[in-house]
Image (tube, rainbow, N blue to C red; front, side, top):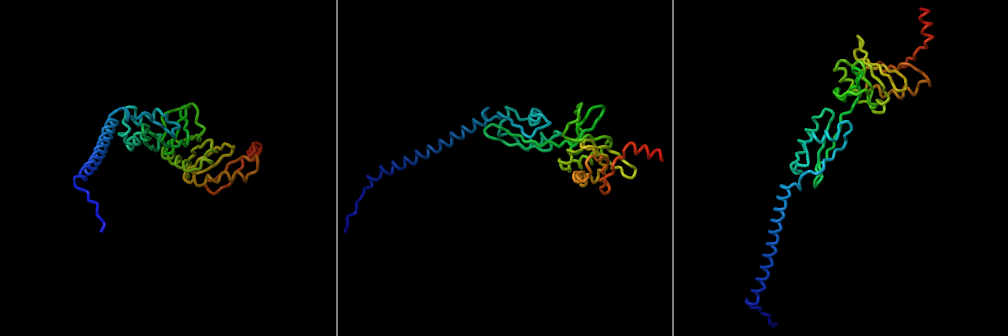
Length: 259
């Protein structure tokens, strides 16, 4: 029979003690590391190191970046972990020209604000100055000596109900078509209080109705493409669609003479 090597208890005890000591040391190091990280985290959260250093604003066009930052309430004294994104978004959205705001944290120290401004769908002239009209019909307080080139001039809309409905129709109109419009005049008739007259950038005029404006006006480019070059007149799209050519001044005089 093979002889078994016998290790006495006295020989094994030092090795067991050494193994237990190593485990205890590793456990102590782990605990100390966790404690250090906890202390470092508390110090970081309570110190200026966790404050916001940069507020980034994107999507602004008419509303100034400084105004958006002021509305947000976020400063370099704000702890980045205490930024309530929902609350900041709601503050920014109180501005009548901002339709939506989205706030996010970009660690370690940046708060990013993305805004979507309400579309300016027209300008109303009052007392020789122009006021922008937003997509919901809201009239801005600020005035300017000249209208913007991004939307048509709205003339005669002295009743808010019709202005709001016109604004919604313009909002639904493709930009490629709305960019062709120079002016929109509200010309209510007894049988049609929604009648409007459009003056286009290409020289044509269009008679339409506010109520079906966004559904019928997109056909304008194709209607114009079928007209003879140099033709001038009024395009009717309120009831059906047809072209009424302007009479020559001489012909008008003849008609008046014959009449």
